[in-house]
Length: 304
Image (cartoon, rainbow, N blue to C red):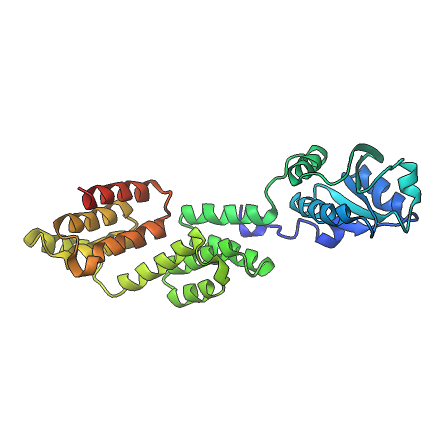
């Protein structure tokens, strides 16, 4: 998927997916529409307490269906005729219409899981939204090393959802990779406070911190390795070597350099090597193989 393939406006707006109807507009809103897309008809009344709980849950799952189903609400106190024709005995009463006919129904307040199953039975399993598809495309571009395309996709997502945490974190990662650290900080500054501990946000912060450190040290691995060969206890050289390996994308080597330093002297410089390792793990992602293997080796060293 390229940026030109994206269609983030493919999902209809909430106002198109959910609407109120009357006796006069029922045929157009429910029967006619159901010839093209399934319609959920919610029959309710202002005095019905269970209706006040069921209605929002129906709306939630209709919206989550990304346009695969519509929802129409009818106040049967104001417009009783349709409920009478459908022989409704109690409310809330919910009908599913397809091809102009009711094909399924339930009444009363039911668990949310049953609501989800009811809608999926009518509309089919809910697939990824256009936003989700765009985020996946951006992640694939990043994995392929195409940061420019990834950044464009993330920017388009943010244009539609300014507080989308995954897009903000992804865009920050793109900026870090491109060496635009100030712009990375700006992107991370837009992440809502409540989302600061989301793994992708932690990873972006860690990547930014590592990049800032890397800008102050030598990235010449040959010279650093020569220093270590001359003095195996040159922890500063091992620390810089780890940053250099990380900048070159050699994650396993970066972790190995720090683990060797910890094996020799874990307390060096206020445990700087261990703290840098944790930063690497956050930047790489806790579920990545290299992070999990690194954590196992670190635990073995610390608790041996």
